[in-house]
Image (cartoon, rainbow, N blue to C red; front, side, top):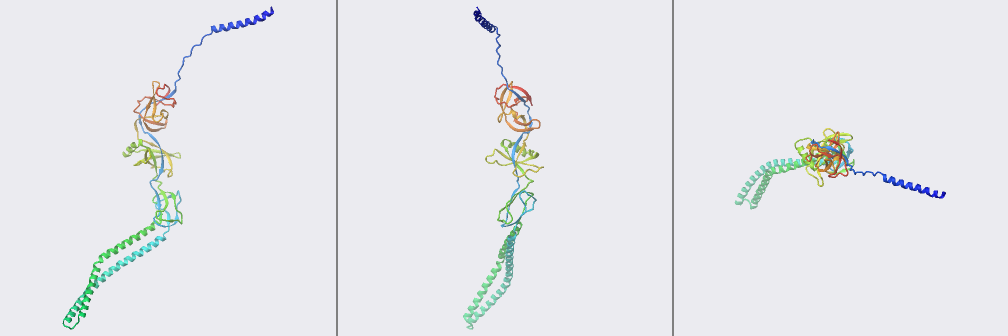
Length: 414
């Protein structure tokens, strides 16, 4: 009997457990099916406001000096002294390099001697002219006397009192004297031509002498303007030839910044310059803001360039050292119906997304430049002809942005 109960009790417990499980399973409530939900990207939007805005353009330029001169030797000489070093400030007329004058002084003495010799020959020719005029009168009288001697010899020869030889001698003397008179007349007539020749030689000798005297000035190489020394290429004791480079200086009061402006902005800048409209820019150097003014545009475009070189000058401040590369912001002429957008609103080079009824619509725009706002910082300017005031555009960086994408606008800003 006890053995029966040992088998029965476990079977009863098992049966109760199975029955309870089946009861609970039958009476269990079925869960409701969850409906699927779509999570929209949360973005920021910006309201379009069209207005007249002056675009800003960031440029990189280099400091240049229009008055940048390499001083060269005008004569062959020895360098006696170099009075400046690289970086020195110089004044107009200051002697930078002193060359030896010894060779020039010798050349001047030689030129003066040549001039004195030619002037003496000129005076000698004048004296000869005066002498020729006096001698001509005497020679003409001798011719007259010789003719009378010929007449006497002729009479004597006809009367057999003289000889034919005496007559021939008298005729020869007449011919010799007449030849001398002719030569003397020729010398006198040629006096004016000889004077012109001698005077031309005097003028030439004076010019050569003056050139040598001017070479004395070339022994002092002076600064052509106020400025700074860039390079010194010689030292005392060097021998120079004509055109040997000595010193390079530039005018630090006339420095300019050369920067390349993209071609699409050139027409507006030329128009502003032709109408005498000031085009301003500014540059920051060592935390100091330097105002600049556009003074001119290059007349040609170099091969391989994508724009035109523009030249800026500062009227109130001195620019950094020659050759330094600087960053500047150019304020372009104002554009009507322009829109300032946050950089987050611009996708790629020229694409923005309008938000219409909660979905994105791609819109291509024309970029006009940049604008630096004191409150909003850097803004991208685009043409507003494709927008209406109050349009809402995407103002967030959305990696999956695509035409037709639905979004949830969290905040709006103008």
